[in-house]
Length: 70
Image (cartoon, rainbow, N blue to C red):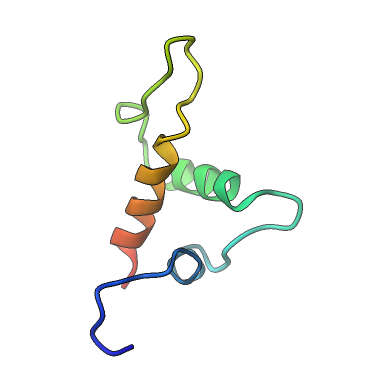
């Protein structure tokens, strides 16, 4: 691909974490757990009106993984 600025989420996860997913765990839950082990993101996490974790936070987690991809 050369100097392309696009990144595939699985490629960036494999590079950053050493693997893209874990058997029995969804890829999104895997990324959420691994990112929280490395960085403290509590101040950036948004909650719904009922106090639950908003699904749109996952977009920010994926963006962080792609930003850290080299």
